Image 1 (cartoon, rainbow, N blue to C red):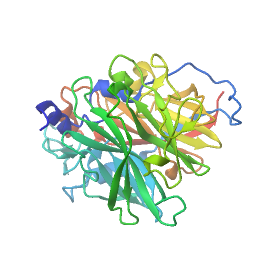
Image 2: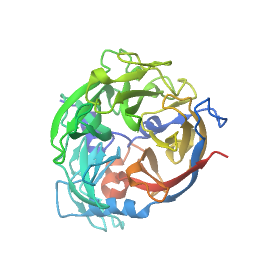
Image 3: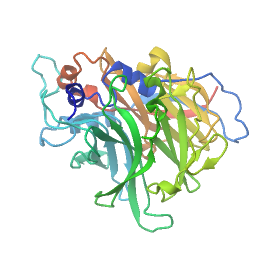
Length: 409
């Protein structure tokens, strides 16, 4: 059985970010500025040239979360990822998620905000369907059951691909992070494995879950790599990015890694190839593409998008700005070299004492040359977190901005 501390974490939503240590660790990224010409990649340096709040998309999640018609649907969550389905629907995936009913406003202490009961149920993951810009329903949650006692699954990136290479049948493949309860400093769980779940189309029935990268034999948990924080597609390959948890112990920042899989092969462990520092190899020990373990590095929560041949990486900025400010990096190849930070911007937060984390791009929502990017919002301190998340439901929901990319100046 989980101990009382672990049980409390499930209740208060400290899965990916209530406590300050987690927010900092999951999103820190620092590096030496390097905005020079690419190293023979033939792409152009890209960075954020402008941004603005996407109030309509943020409001849609507030509308759906505040709807009190059901007691078993999504009212808030973090770890925001999305994937476009062949029939046009958008599948949104979340990690730790509040279910139940939202009340008010006003709330019991007289504040003009909607509120949830302190006993509102929380699950480790959920999925919500959107059609034509409107959220419609929550799939039975959790969508991915715990694999073992004191273990859980967090969904990350997903894509629609052939059931197998060359197949005419499509399925949804969802990357999953498996973690287990652990002592401090592993307050958000010890990393154990990367899995791939297969969902049927169009019904989204869970067909199977396969371990593609088991890390339990790596003795030092800080060196275990979980893949799937983001993925990109190019020339018949899916590039899957991941990170280690080096910052959870002695090292201040973590490292970024990349693997690749031929289209249709995400669920086949034998199809995965890892960048070993000089080439792609199966069953190889992955080598970092960004991070020196001291000053330059990346946490597990970052996102990569490809535009006009250039890969652009979004993460929270280094240092104290990592609680509020998003930075961008660029490269001509998934394996780098990565250049930056190039440009930073600070999106809005709902109130003092909150932090932004986990910036994720949603290319399927891009319009008019602007890229949609989400960021999660949470209360920074452990003390009083459960009260704050119950008293103000907007603290545990994604917010959105649109960004326009342009040349590095």
